[in-house]
Structures are given as C-alpha cells and as structure tokens.
Length: 470
Image 1 (cartoon, one colour):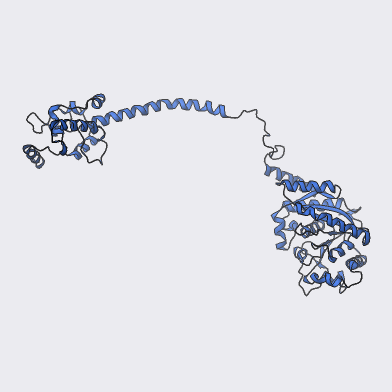
Image 2 (tube, helix red, strand yellow):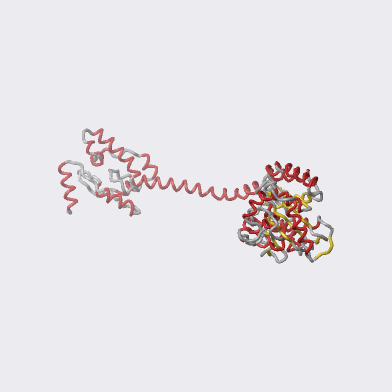
C-alpha cells in the first residue's frame, strides 16, 4: 500500500473524516470523457466495512441530467463519509444537512479550477446538465437566425426611399450644371472666363480720369484701384495710377519703390516737380505706370493751405502732362486717402468720374450720404464735369443676409451706376499685395481675379465712346 493509502487507513482507524484530494477529482473530471463503467470517485467511495473501496461508479457518475439536478439527497449510509466539514461532527442531523448541501453545490464545481473549497462528487453530472441546457439554448437561437436574415431584405425595402422621388431635393443642387455647389461654382467660373476671353475691351477716344474715393477706410479703394488698372492694362489700355494716399499702398502693390528721398506726388503738389519726372513703370504690366507716394505726403495738406489755388494743384499738373503726350493714357486712376481733406478734394477736381467702392456692410452705407454731399459741393464750385459714374460692391459674402441686403439697398438707390459685377471676399486678393502684385498676376484663375477682370470689362463697356479695339 502506498503512502496515501496508509494515510487513508490511519485516518479511518482514528475515526476522523478523511481528506479527499479534490485536485485529482477536478483533473479527472476535466480530462476524462467518462466512458461507461468509469467512476473517478470510485477509490474514495465507502465500502460496507467503513473503508474506502472501489464501488459501482458507473451508476453514480453518469446518471441522467434530470436525476442529477433533482436527486439532492444521497444514501443515508454514506452521510458519515461525505460530511467532511469539520463543523458538522456535532450530530447526525447536521451532517445529513451538510451532505445534502454539498451535493447541490457540487454540480457547478467541475468547471471551476480555481475553487479550492470542498465540493461533492455529483459536480460532474450537474456540469454536464448545465452544458446541455446551454447547448439547447444556443441551438434555439441559431435556429431563429435564418428567419432574421430573410426578414432583413423586407425591412430594408420598406425603409428605402421610393424610386420616383424628385431628384432636385436640395435647393443647393443644380443638376443642370454639376449637381453640387462646388461643381456649380466651377462650371459658372468656367463659363464666365470663356465669355471674357471671347470679347475685346473697348478703348476710349479720350483719356478717362477716375478717382476712387470713399472716406471710410478698409472698403477696398486701393485694392480696387490696383486690380482694375491691371485688368485694363491686360486688356490693351495704357493706364496711369496716381497714388494720393500717404500710406503708399498702391505703389507697393504695383511693384514701385517709394522711399522718402525719392520724388513723389508730393513734389508735384507743391510745384517742385512735374508728373513726367515722377512717373515710374510698374512691374505689373508694361502698359501700366505709377506716380508713387511717400511719407512726405502726410504733411502736404498743411502745406497746401497757404498755397494759391490749393484745390487745383493736381489737375493743372495732370492736364499739362497729358497735353504734352503724343500717345496719352487711356485711363488715369487716382487712389484717394480715407478722408475728405485737401488731398481728396484735389483728386475730385482733377477727375471727371468718381468710382465709389462700397463694402457690403452697414457702416459703409452710413458715410455714403456725406460723401455724396461733398461731391455735390465740388460739382457746384470747383468741377462741374465731375459725375458719379461707377459704384463697385466689394467684400461681398454671399453666406450672410446682411451683405445681400446692403447690395440690394445700393442697387435700389443707384440702379445705373452700380456695376453688375460684385467683388467677393477672397484670400488671394489679400495675399497679392505682399508679393508686390495684383491678384490678376498673382493668381489669374482665382475668383477674385475673375471678378476684377469682369468689373474692368464692364467699366470699359459702359464708359466713354469707343474709338477702336485692340
């Protein structure tokens, strides 16, 4: 007899309940398939003489699943051996109750490898029964799965939209062009470019002198001056830009340097130089020239106060220069500062037409009435030839109702002067001056370039009588 058997016999002789090796029981239950006639607990079953003897294991180890769950009470003769709990030795009734409880709990212990507590030998049948129940439930669920798959197409067909639904559901979609807002924009710009390329800009019979003015700052005066001049020059016209703003932004945008020690429009106003001596060619185009401005122009208004005919200084210098030219400019565009001082008055007196850029915001409308009052005073006392020929809507944001309302308000009050072309907000327009270029040369295919080219073409067609075409 081995050591374990000797320990078992000794325990039996002492009358103490023996300790069952449950690790071996669990290993046997997990590794064996319980063939017929095999009982993993046979070596621990009590015999008739009270010792552990192999017994009939087949009937006890493989009962029906229903019997394993319903028969919770074991044979009363085996109670003393199965009740191994040290606290159940007081009386026989407590041992019988403890033994029954262990029989019930043993059904779930076969699959629990980490449980080191005491379990009854009936755990294997109970585990088999529980696994059988789970298998039945899984089979029931699997049997219903094909029904769900068959019902899915019907549900999808019920939720699918009808095939005869209208195609123009979204008001932002235009199937006639591209079907999407981006495609519509590309198609629209392509059509506009083709229309521009198919036409030639008319050239005026005499020089048109325009002043770009608005006392409100930041409405696009300098930007409009530079880009309209560049577009007209590309269209075949000879253009001169006079920068009358002390900041000199128009000179910078046209690629003309304007240091303080160089001659500028300031020297023309105070009578120290002629326009011919101050003109600089622009890097923007060969048919585009510029009269630059520098910082000295900031003090010109104070100096002009004491001069004779201070309002006529620029006009006299310009008329004299144009009269001496064999091939005069087709357009002279004057960029004004954002004020109504002597510099702006000199521009109004020198010009024949006024171009007013209006930002599509509320504040731009507030100062328009005051600007119109000053223009009327100039017409009455200093320049009767001055007319408001053009109003250009700038910085238009089609996403806002305010921009559309301002544009409509301007068109209602100035139906003939307002151009059909609207200049949209564009990043390219803002980037171009930092490179010393107009938006037309900086990004010819951008929406800002296209809009200014259209505005220049509209300005040329609705202007002075046509003498020839390029």
